[in-house]
Length: 297
Image 1: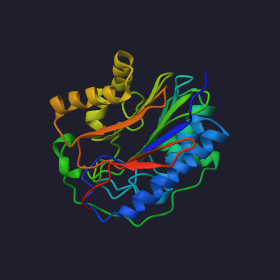
Image 2 (image 1 turned 135 degrees about the vertical axis):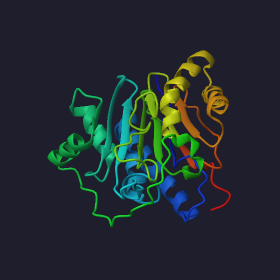
Image 3 (image 1 turned 30 degrees about the vertical axis):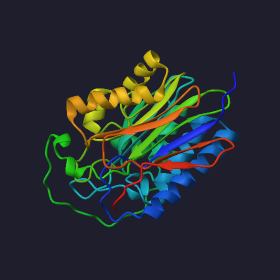
Image 4 (image 1 turned 60 degrees about the vertical axis):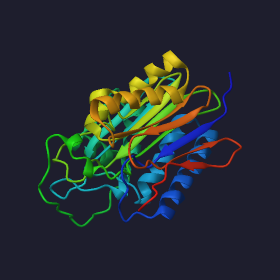
């Protein structure tokens, strides 16, 4: 069986009422799609989603990699994960500070260890040992120490712009990857959904999914895995995403999450209950399509 290669990326679900540039969002999403497709064609779906997310991390435009927001102590702590649906394997890192591209470190965990998730100092040490590029030193950005223990109750914090990618290659192998700097002003050591397989990202032989939004909601609902289960029942990615989002709306309310998925047939779709979720996709031989842009910035 042969499949038409597809790559899709998102820039985060939220209200996007920031000083972000709409031109910048469009530019880097398109660059991410182009780079991801090139890697899919040269290598495979895993390499494609890896490259796509690295472009977004390096842009500084999103809350991931160089654009990561600080925690309550004014420090950067980042999470990332990547999954190979053809093998059912995943690699992830959490609360990392050393590496410029957390998703690349997660890729090394996937490829070169028998672990799934490595966190904190251990992950930073691994990145240094591997010789991965170090995060540039940034000026401390201390924030007011006001933080609720129930993050989903603080919807005003959901500004969006974490990143993720899903893809399928010509051999019908699916993959998913995600990266984030976490919630602005989060408690030190807090880990959200992004590095948790089945929550922030998931891929198997039929579907690849990434989630964005309030990490506690996504983790408690195991949303990416729920989409895969819903796809098994419906065989329609758009219906599966909508069913899971409806469950979230009932249980947690709106302005909480966004979901992006691609299935074995190359169908790609996104659903979100926030003001915006910039996302786009690129099918082999076609032009990029970008949707979900904020109407006010």
